[in-house]
Length: 154
Image (tube, rainbow, N blue to C red):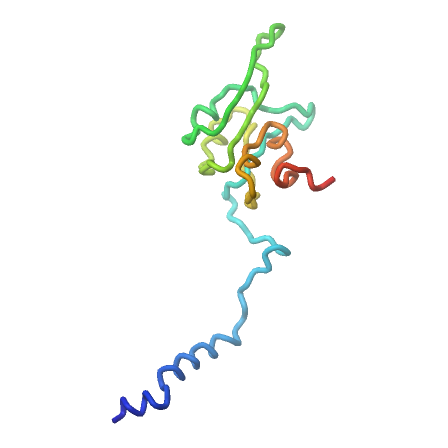
């Protein structure tokens, strides 16, 4: 008889609604994402950047090819040629495929000149997979200056 009365008066539904309303008027923990960026961990690895020398403005990459060798996904391509005068390697092209990157940080750790760096930028969505293959110019600008292959801060 008690079970029948519980079914008629929807006791289980009322208990569930009471529980829902109890949590309705508490402090909201929603982040206002586009306006406020979330706090990331200090060791978070996001979009790659190719660093330049602050004095000369030239890239710090010496074309040693260590980053391409250690990359588990084989997504970094470093092109170089020897300068006939100084006999040093000169960087000709550098590409980084962010669509396949694991963001493991091995390329950053192995670089002897700290040329490649994984930044805190995390908004890497794109409509076209071809726009996720970054060349040397895009990597030197960094993701905060690139938006689907176009410079949107101009």
